[in-house]
Image (tube, rainbow, N blue to C red; front, side, top):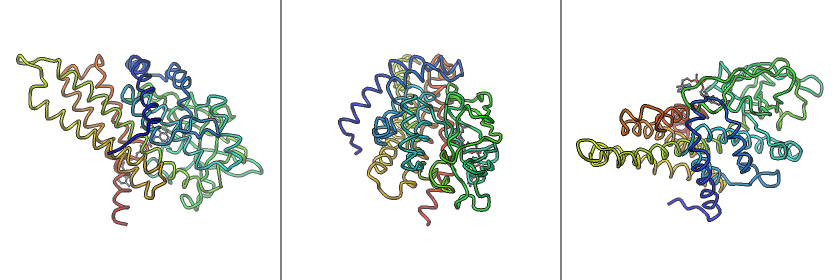
Length: 379
Ligand SMILES: Cc1cc2nc3c(=O)[nH]c(=O)nc-3n(C[C@H](O)[C@H](O)[C@H](O)COP(=O)(O)OP(=O)(O)OC[C@H]3O[C@@H](n4cnc5c(N)ncnc54)[C@H](O)[C@@H]3O)c2cc1C
C-alpha cells in the first residue's frame, strides 16, 4: 500500500480545493478559447506552485517528487491543460537542478521565484523527437559566447515563458556521447523568434510553439553545467518528469471516471439507471482497476525517486507507459458511458479524452517507454 505523510496529505487537500473551486469551473472556457490563460498563470503563481519542484534554499517550496505528483494529480483531475502548464515547469526545474553548476544554482535558479519566471524546455526539433540525439541545432563557441542557430518545436509554455532551456550540438561528431550541451536563452534575446500557437487536438489552453534561433549569442556563463553533458542531464531529468507525466494521465483518468460514475447513477434508460446494466458496471470496474494499478506504479516511481533508489529510469517508464495508456482507455470509456452526451463539450469527458491522447506521446512516446523497459529486462 502506498502511504503518504501528513504534510503530503495537507498539500493534496489544499490543491484539491483550489482545483475544484478555481480551475475546474474555468476549464471548459479555457479549452474553448484555445489560448494560454493569464488567469491560470496568476492563480498558480499566487500559490507558488510554479516553484514547487525547487528546493527551499533557491526559493522553492521544496516539495519532494511524491508531493509534486499529488499536486499534479489533483490539477489534472480538473484540467489537463492547467496540469501540463505546471508539469512543464517541473521538467525545466528538474533539468536546472541536474545541470546547474553551484554558481548557476546560486545566481540563476533563485530568479525563477524572485521574478516569477516560466522556463520552457526545448529538446524536440522538426526532424528529431523520439530520436532526440538526432537534433541539428548548433552552438558554436566564439570567445566568451556561444552562437546558437536552429529550430526547436513543440515548445510547451512557449510564448509566456521568459526563459528557454535549449539543447544544442557543441560537437557534432560526439552527439549523445558528449556532443550536446544545454543553454539558457532569454525570450527577448536578439535572434530569438517564436512561432504562432499550434492548434492542437487537446490541451488547447496550453501554449505550444516553434522556437527559431538565428545566430543567438549566449554568454558561456549561461551554458548550463558542463559542455557536452546536456544529453546526460536530459536523461536524468526524465527520472522525475516521466512520473509527473504519468500523474497527468492518472488525474485525467480519475476526473473522467468520477464524472462517468456520477452520470451512470443519474441517467435512466429502459426505466432504470444505466449503472444497473452489467455492461456499464463492467466498464466502471475496468476503469477503477486501471486507475488503482496506475496509482500504484506512479507513486512507487515517485517514492523510489525520493528515496534515491536504483533503476529509476525503468520504474519511471513503467509508470509513464501504464498510467497514460490507462488514461486513454478510461477517458474513452467515460465518453462511451455518457453516450451522445459524452461527445459534446457540455460535459468534460470529451475534453479529457482529447487531453489524454498526448500523454501517450510526449516525454517519450509509449513505444519508446516499451523500448526502455525491454532493454532493462533483457540487458
Ligand atoms: C503537445 C505537445 C507538447 C510537447 N512539449 C514538448 C516540450 O515542451 N519540449 C520538447 O522538447 N518536446 C515536446 N514535445 C515533443 C514530444 O516529446 C515528441 O512529440 C515525442 O518525443 C515524439 O516525437 P515525434 O513527435 O517527433 O515523433 P517520432 O519520433 O517521429 O515518432 C513517430 C512514431 O514512431 C514511433 N517510433 C519512433 N522511434 C521508434 C522506435 N525506436 N521504436 C518504436 N517506435 C518508434 C513513435 O513512438 C511514434 O509512434 C511535445 C509534443 C506535443 C505533441
